[in-house]
Image (cartoon, rainbow, N blue to C red; front, side, top):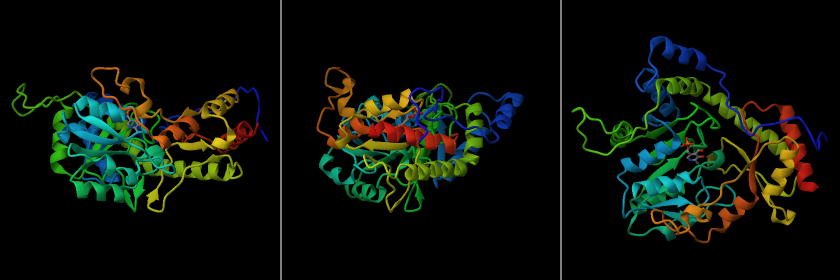
Length: 380
Ligand SMILES: Cc1ncc(COP(=O)(O)O)c(C=O)c1O
């Protein structure tokens, strides 16, 4: 046992890994003076990443949030429409729906995959429902076969939020190419990063051209004459240069995430008081972050165990605070809806779940130390 009570050791929850041709490509942008949102790396990154996702089109933008917003706008979702989203997710999922003027409708998640539960979706569908927004949580893909089947029967669009799941697969098909439109984030803690950045992926030509139009202030051929309200959600050539180099290494990064998860699985196999990530038969889980959920029988919330780990130099992150618990969505704000309701699985995950250091820079020694610290924090 290597656990210490006080330590100078610090293991971050995640760090970016720029181990490819990032420097070379960025210098090429600077040397060529192409640093804004024009330049060859943008289409190259779009093509390479979309193809990685098995999608026909990729439209790079300034963040994962922008990608989700553009996806909804391109589907013409707006006032009077409802979009079904998971109750357990980042607040961005609800926010982007609200920005369009539509209403988010919450649906609980599965206890094992932590993704939208297909068994609970149909009870949420009304004549106003226009789309289902799926979040592939912490690297595990949602049950897309079941969700696409529901969507097709009810004539709904499906938006896949793949921010945390680059390269994840459902029966061999990559996320971001299964629904009508996908959205990815390249924030610094994501499987690949551009610092900040995002991309919309789709196999639909019309959605792709609408997203590209709206990303760039809806500028059209006749300059300064606008037929749509667009946004400045452009990505820079510098970011795309990093993104291209990162995509070239994406297979390695996914393999390293899977290896980290398998190692934690081994190291934590004897800790009975917590559940670990699953991988359903249909899924390739890319384990963006290795989440654990404490058993209620431990009688301690995640915050207590996380504090103990922090004292030993192990950084962790709490699971999301569900949408129905967000102060901004309690019916007290005239612009935002009241999303209060009963979502017990989300509540449970939020109270007892957190994730361990999972970056590609983690060493085997780090993982052994983290596992020892977690075991002692759970058993103390
Ligand atoms: C599930 C999910 N969706 C969307 C986003 C938003 O991405 P970004 O931070 O790039 O706007 C994130 C990022 O953290 C995320 O985890």
